[in-house]
Length: 427
Image 1 (cartoon, rainbow, N blue to C red):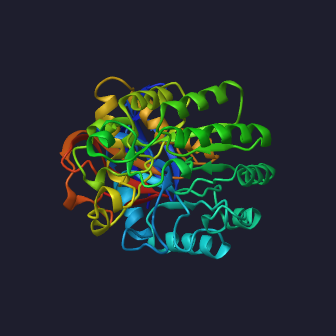
Image 2: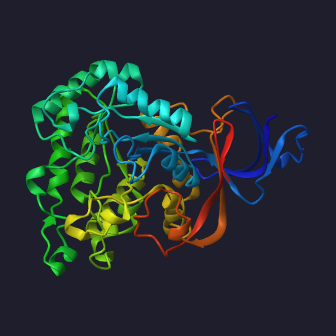
Image 3: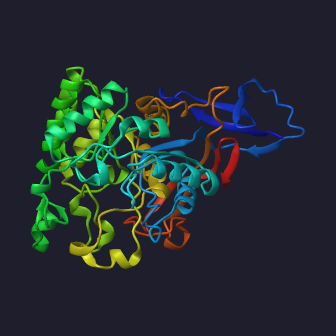
């Protein structure tokens, strides 16, 4: 038995909107019918989902997430993390390797993939680390990790401090047509700092993380990417200087792509209400000038895609305060509604722009066969209620952790049905 999704509103990158009927059979999109023709499909023997008045999009793709398993299951695991992602409308997610053990061996890759297949509800693609144990001293076995199924290499959570090590990694990855994904941070500039160098740090007498800590590595790695020809992807861009460097690199044809998180698009350090560690993340919230720069970078194509950097931590860990609590906030369950409310409802972005940066564009950047509603493609579909406004409530969060600064915010545009590989995984 297949599924007919009837009367759904679709939108393309040019913001052309149309009403469609979509048939799912097995795990593929079998038909896409123009509903404006007035013909009603024969739905006998099929499940029917009436999507009248709702947006129907390809399933969202998130290329930067932390599922915490193995090693940190008190924060999140593959089962809870994929359900949280499904609630947010995501059907494909790429998990970062800073687990324990880190994802630096074939055995750990297999563990992730097996767990995702048996306990997860959506597609999980792992990254492998650049260096063994993320220590920056010795490259992992790139060929074996690629064969096992990783999508690229990153020491996310830790910047690769040695330029020679990064150049060696890029050269090897380029020879295998694989990307290097970089958490850009010069450790010598960030020791002991919990927030960015700005008004909040000054007000509370805290050491600040300067913008240069990120931008120095971005600039270094762009030059190394040019030298090696690797596809270099910059994680969670947050500073005006990084945007400027990436824009310049793209003008020269260097193979660099970049991502930005919702929280860096909607919040600055001036929004932090107090010493609540649910506002502590890495990169930290920057100045309003940086926020404007990353918005402009996304809008003009300097930054390619939107990711969540979903980073769950337990309430006990976050209760340790700004200095001692770990960096990171949740992202899955508020990403679309946050950006729809902030940018689409205000008229700054079109709906098509937002959907593209969360679906087709990440698929294009990483060469994935997803992110589209074309016949024959994977039946990954998200249905969104664009009209309902709801408050973000702690008790309704599906993630195992609750560390988000957006509790209490009223947002509009909520995913109501998520279909992954032809199965309804959230409703």
